[in-house]
Image (cartoon, rainbow, N blue to C red; front, top):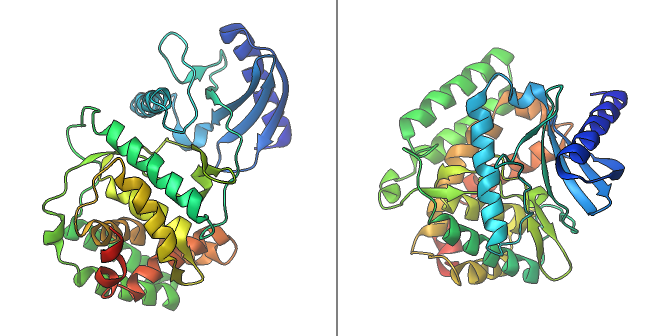
Length: 333
């Protein structure tokens, strides 16, 4: 999207905010994060706001009403979490709708502005990680009262993994990508070593689903806000725990156990941490994300984008410590 197009969209949204909410936008600054969607800090006569402008090529909200309904639901849940005191931005609704639409068909959401900054991966401090654990534990407990969907969005299914693995393998082979093929051999060995019976006792629940450092805003001693709930759905809450721990505590190939312990200490104050939870959580996130990251398209991109390389690093860490996970994590639950 060109700068001129961004400016046009910002002006249209500002006019719509005035008409719909009565706010006068005095300044709009684009936030350079995320894929395709444009995010804004808009300074109004009522204070700063965060505005998320949904890109038509990513969400296609005009042609996919079910997708719009899904995002509306996540924004409604986020507003409920904010109202319950969990640190996340409140969402503004107009006549019960959390996604606003301008006359020309621009879709956007308006949220409270949160003052905070994101840490580098692996660099969340002990006090911050404890407060994150508290926030996630409270979030999971609140979400536990939300009526479930008819079925989880994801299940730990070995056959489904194998099917997707095979597709990734064929693409890597066709590209002659021997590095990605090595990744996939290692991934296959790790999954073959999993005992899928450990998933039998877990119950599905609503979760954030994207709890990594870019979506965690911090201040010096704690958490300013958890953001970006677009992917929220019903699967298994332990996935949030694994994602937060890998993103916040894995640095230079070492999982900082004191940071993990701080997170779990905070989490246990509000949500259960049964025996085997952390190992099971790492297995689940590996089943999901190894399919996303350990493939030839990502390997090529990761040479240019540190973000993708970081996710690959996390998957390799799980592989390299697979047999040792019970000893590494068992005492931290």
